[in-house]
Length: 411
Image (tube, rainbow, N blue to C red; front, top):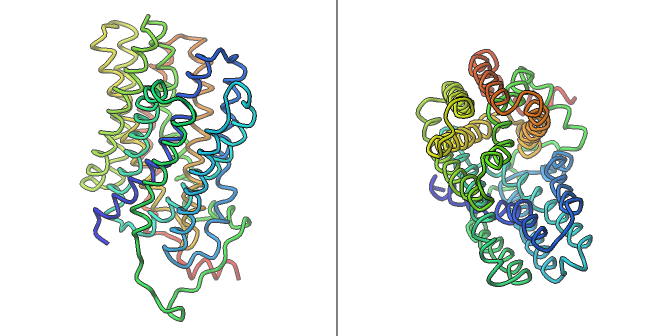
């Protein structure tokens, strides 16, 4: 399969999962507020994200007895079809009278999208050669950013034209259409006798990831890598509110302008990784994030002109886009054979959990020392991350746990 075919499959898969997710998590609260829902009910929407936080728990189920790429293809198709069916089902319920039912169905939908993500990540690890992984992960990041752009912008406008039920039908159709590239994928058949023997993975194999030689450094790097920018991203909208921008202006500045820069930088990030390599790219992206955080802190302190505000937004979102590609790429290189979905998911969940903690801490710091202190603290963290890359990053392929070693350890 040509690289372009691989990239198109991955882009379509990540678009399929991110567009409905973006709509449910960012646009639905707007619709609910327009329908006079309480903030408490709107806050309950955060429950739908739980499957993505705990998805590593059923990673072994997806990896179980995985002998070839077609195994993950089946999981992807089955998950996406069920995802689309649940979305259609949501459309038959009214927000006013069936709110609890809709929430439960959304949780089911997010379980399916999380399952598809596990299988898609494992599929990507297996089909991408090492030299293709930078651009392959650009497709993943760009698909997420473009899905956010479409889901939080275009679909909100479409909702005003066609209403809730028909919009759910459109979302389901998007998910099914995005399956066409993976449905067309075929793998060269290998005789059963020549297929590599794989140990069936179980839940007990999850702790084994943390026994990979040198994995401690990798875990630390994953936990801290976003620390120089994630707090600013979380507090950006409240900061713009305090500057006096309207909701419509903020929606454009962050949801369209910022996300577009994130998607464009994600595309660029893959080419940069291909040219510079993982370690130099990690250092460059971390330094770029430090620069963006420093510019944001200077904006707060000295000049809040709209041009500078847009410049800061562009820098922060583009830093996030490139950093995402780097994190996905190095995570893809640190997986055990036959456990690709589980190991990759563990690493991405680590970044989600650390980001969640950092966002909570950022809110407290912002209340304590203000935006200028928060943004300057983020810049300092970004500089520390830049300086730490050399000590924390080791090429895992030099020490990758082989299939034979896994069997010897388990014996």
